Image 1 (spheres, rainbow, N blue to C red):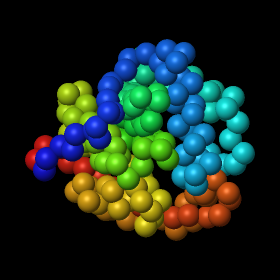
Image 2: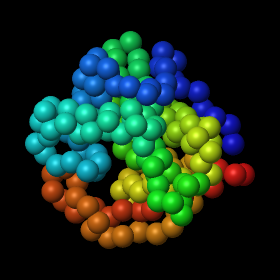
Image 3: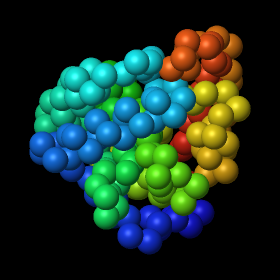
Image 4: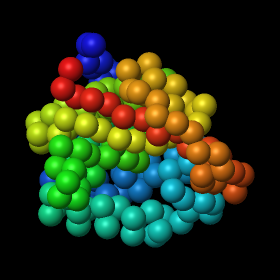
Length: 180
């Protein structure tokens, strides 16, 4: 399957350290996604300080190598991100979790989500991972994206989480075998 290039004017990079400018951009993306209804672990209202606290925790794990962070930037700044949880139990050294794929509303429907997923898959391969796992809102835009990109649906859990406004939503689990 071909790797989609990032949309014109957008660069995706892996970072080992989150500087102050990138931190604020990541905060912007997280707040925008949650305010736009994305079920990514937060409910409304999401304050900038709470979002900043989340990204500081992620930054610590990125610096220790427990997570691999990809950041997408356009002329306005950070417009998307995804990360891989690569620190796994001893019996799962070949696996990583793809988590918190986020695209700012200004960059949606441009192909950035697909490019971020493919970049994360390539990063996982570079790190020696052969199996990726993720979950997404059942029937949501992200779930449709993962299925288009060849991820294998494992199953659904109804009422697993809630949307930012508190409505319940189901979750679908997927995996991707990177060996083939």
